[in-house]
Amino acid sequence: MHSDCTHAACHPAPPPWRSLPVCFPGDATVQVEGKGQLTMEQLRPGHRVLSVGWDGKLRYEEVYMFTRADRSAVGQYSRISALSLDGTGQPTTHELRLSPFHYTTSGADPSSTCAALAAASAPAGASDKDGTLLAAWHAAAQHLDFAGNHIMKLPTEVSPGMVAWLADPADASGRATPACITAVNATLENGAFSPFVRARGIVVDGVVASPHVRWGYVWGRLWLPAAVNPYVPAVMEALLTPFWLAYKVLGPRLTWRILQHPIFGSWDMGNIIVGNLAVWGQAAAALLAAVAVARHRRRVRLAAAAKCKCE
Image (tube, rainbow, N blue to C red; front, top):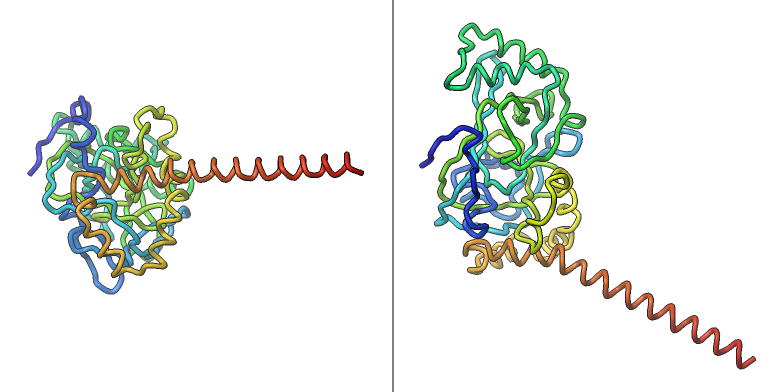
């Protein structure tokens, strides 16, 4: 179920933060190595899903954690629609549904042909019946490269005329390719699933999204200025390294058994625990380590000074 709106009205006043799932809906799909297309509900730790590296190259990475896996949830999501030409030259629309606090890969089109195409695709715009605008965008898109042109944005920062990035395992280039965003709408969806992989992007419904959200539900995250948004996914990737190492020790089956605990299926308790441990837990550990080192060095200096006095 969903309700459409214009981009300006999609997120007028977000509901209380606990009602916003930081996830993908249950029927969103991923491409799993050796298994084909699976829904989020079917996905498990250990599955190797189609992902994208910083350089834009496609690769398969293991799902090592979920901070939420709740098939009964119903929540507000953003739906980003992007237009491109397929391998046969036919126009194809791709749709990515993700929560308002979940990052996606985007970018700007310096040629402005995407903006013209998006304006023509709007309900009140002149339609591109002869395909001229789409052809112009397709030509301009050949000059865009994921490594140099992508940026991480929240759905609330994305608008028609911007660039989305697609990934098709059948594409001979083996890289993410640009598509023109023509609409951003709000929608209500069933299910809330938040899988993590060690990659710049995870491919969901053929579109490259980030595995990360805006600090999960880390206390203090809403105080951060919008200017830090593009850098949050890279920071979270580093901070979640201990959880990835724990997965490597525990293995997929035991990890999934742990994730069956009710805290990972109730609103977003799993996000709260993992996010705050990743940020504030490690910050506290680093502070304690720094204090311990400082105290040890002070004791060494005092011992050396006392020894000199004795001599």
